[in-house]
Image (spheres, rainbow, N blue to C red):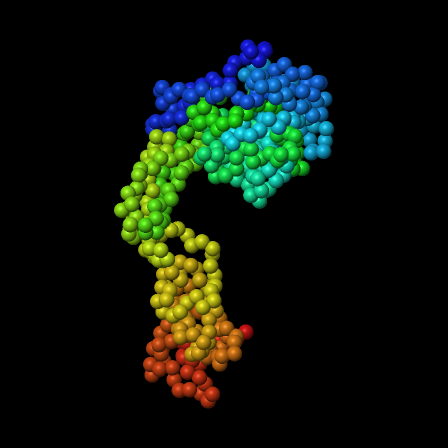
Length: 476
């Protein structure tokens, strides 16, 4: 089938709007009509190319012929929607695997860009194969890889790998058939967006313009199937590779595929947001959603307007929004700048971190509360010696009671230059009796008893604890 006879790229209305039904998000009965995309700057259909010639013809009419490198290892195979496609064998970066080198004019002086290709990836590892890599070198590029080892990834930069704006999917590119991968670089919105089969997967902020990717000395705009880095070559088939010098709208991108997938379920419908007085809350722009093709994407959220009076002072309020036709809500908490609010009555789930010990973490009875000590699972407290002068609180015997009452934990007395008030370690085994002993209630006279020669007050109290336990204090 010739290029003139094969079906046009645009095939379907954009099924972007959805309605809620029976716990799932379903497509509307009459979808909105997709907008027609403009004519691309370059379009490689691979239909009539003689691969042995080492050239790939441009069907856009602009004459931007590409070069097929290592053409003997490439094959012509059945295309995605009729016609032919280019099958690339993959391989190590220095191997004889085929790839396509693009002419400089593919990028040219454009500010905005859209790159799209129908792809049938083999699914073979290793990671970091390139569907395309446009730009100059490892300092300036725009690429999409079917998998970085875990997910579909697009990146753009003019400052090397450390300055990339990255767009990540939720899984690798599916390798179960033909998929349309589209990337838009929008200088007005300052976003780079990855689409899969006509629906946005995710996006990221960037200030890069397409023309910034090319140095004046560059003779090529990059490659199809090959990386600027020493990454493996792409293994799979490529069809209908097209580039526009504009950022296509979501409706125009949806119009390039036959059947755009539709959202099924939102991963969450409620959000917690914090802000300070006088600062508008930063509400989430998207929510992860499942789609009819089995690949999760970020679904945009449209929020109701928030009057400034809502966040003028401390408090809490709710904002409603919609995502794929379903209502979502955000609970916004407003606090004063620098103010710390602790709500110990709110259950936030299991204590994170598995705390087992602290340094000066307990001041004395009530600080912190026994409930908090128990919730943290605190087992040891390293603190100062009894009656030590270095702090006004956190005396060892004052710490024993709340720790023992809450978790039956141990107190470790710090070794320092200050005179000790008790032996090194007191094991908390009978918190109830220990607490009474500290108060002197287990002694017949209600007091710790008389001091022995050379004994300091803290040691007198400790002897009362020992008598109450009927055991010896362990030393280290």
